[in-house]
Each structure stands twice: as structure tokens, then as C-alpha cells.
View 1 (cartoon, rainbow, N blue to C red):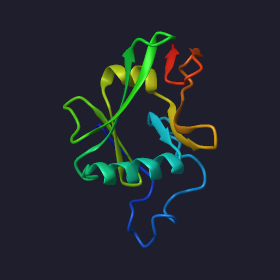
View 2: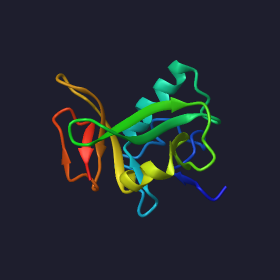
View 3: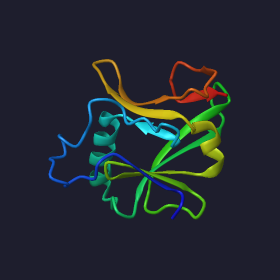
Length: 140
């Protein structure tokens, strides 16, 4: 499949899950998307809790119209990719992006933050020209 991009080492190749995660974000270097080790770990554990198969299912990232700034990020689990999806793999975690959303998400890095004040995913998107305070809405 030409729309599958594998980024990072596969789990179980002589390393524990903790050792297989690099200290720096896995940047796409022209591949389309990046993901930090914290985001990968959080997605992996949430997929296990939801019973999503890592070999067939994955995380779906998208963009929908609406929100304070005009566009909103969409994030959910899906049991399989759609026909025209771009499929990325980060250390065994698959990410599906539809072609229309890819126009807005190209070059983006997904991070996960857990502090005393906030916990959740951060979309570090170079295509965003403005975003609202909640962090889930942006304009391009």
C-alpha cells in the first residue's frame, strides 16, 4: 500500500516498550505527521482499554468545520482505515488521516501533556494561523 508510512522502530525488536521510545518527538521529515513518545504511549494504552486491535485499528485524526476559530480537530479510534486514508505508523500505533484533513494536518506533531492543570493531546500545527484558548479550534 503506497499510503502507509512507518516511522520508528517496531515494538519487540529486542527492546522493551520504554526503550523503543525515543526521547525526542518522531518528526515526519517531509512524511506528513509527527508524534511525541508521550502521545504514542497514551494512544497505545487507550487503544488497549478500548479493545482496538493495533494491527487493524488505529487513531483517526481529522479536521471538521466549526469551533471558535473556524476549524476543529477531531480525534477518535477507528477499527480500520478507509479506502483513501493516509496511514502512518509510529512504533506500532497506526494513525489514519483522510485526504481533506491532511491538507490542514500536514507537518503537524501530536503531543500529550499531563500536568496539574491540564491533561490531553496538543496539536502542534504549523498550518494554524490562529487558535482559541481551548486548543481544539484553529484557523488556517
